Image (cartoon, rainbow, N blue to C red; front, side, top):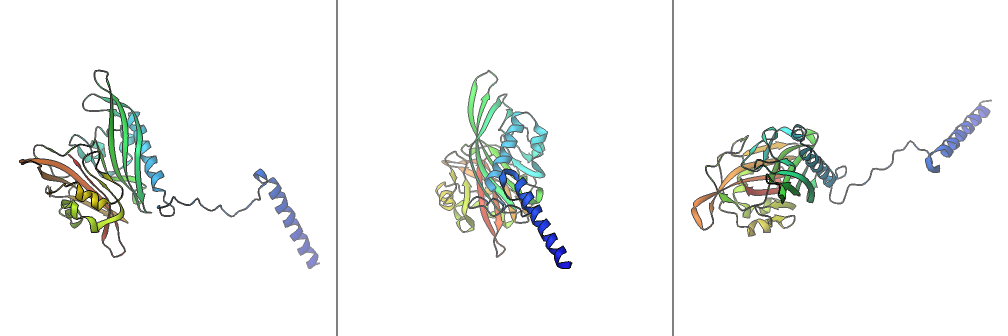
Amino acid sequence: MKLVTFTLLVGVAACARARDNNNAPNGSAASTVPAAPTPAPAGAPAGVDADTRARTLLQQQINLALAGKHDDLVATFSKDAIVLAGDDNVSTADQVNNFAIGGGGADGASIDKASIAKLVARGTKDAVWFYAEVSTHSTGPGGGPGIGSTRVVELLTAASSWHVAAASFDSPDELTPAGMNTEIAGATGAPALAQTLATPSKLGAQLASDAVAIGPTSDQVATSDAAKALASWKLEPITLFKNAREVKGSGWAFAQASFDRPHPGRPTLTDRGLVQLFAVPKPDGSWSIVLVQYRRQ
């Protein structure tokens, strides 16, 4: 009797499996085993698609700026993130009036179209960082159209649910003389990581093999051979102005600072600039710079 009962149970189970298979969509076999995850793109760690994450965030920011949803745009940043914006506007995101990717500006022009022209992203499971160029179309106070480009540099962190921890929005231009410099907002002191920024031509040993380097002008962007590019741009001599801002998290760090530089050919004038770097830890506990940017103030 036990043998017959067991045989019947096995038969019932087999019939049930056959019925489920016949009812499965498109004739496929039903299974409780989940499908294998889609591999991450080459160069990105498993589980992190840096390009998609960066592109999705930036497109969201552009859409919000064009729609005039400033508060929602600000909400993509961590509350303590310092944004290096244009027109000497360096502060937390809620104090930035114009991100230059959509909407109105201080000069009365209004950006009515914007699109991502270029994006280079890198990432780990803890952070994603990227450089992008956003093409813009604007209408001025007199009604005339204008074509422009805004360079966007951002660091997103997993610990903040992929909000932006540090960022820059600017139009490429030469470093120029200005009035009195100002200490970077949220300064934390004179940390060692930030001090390396005063000598861009000597950053080579600290740069990751795929580091991104960005200089002040439109032709100064390097997504490979960053050390060679930094040396060729001849940005020195640079003096960091007062204290820098340095923040370290789980698997990432960044530093931001204001700087001075004697104007080439006219050393009695002083150029004003802003600089930032993003870094990730090495196994020995030191830091590898994955992105560095020098820009006008």
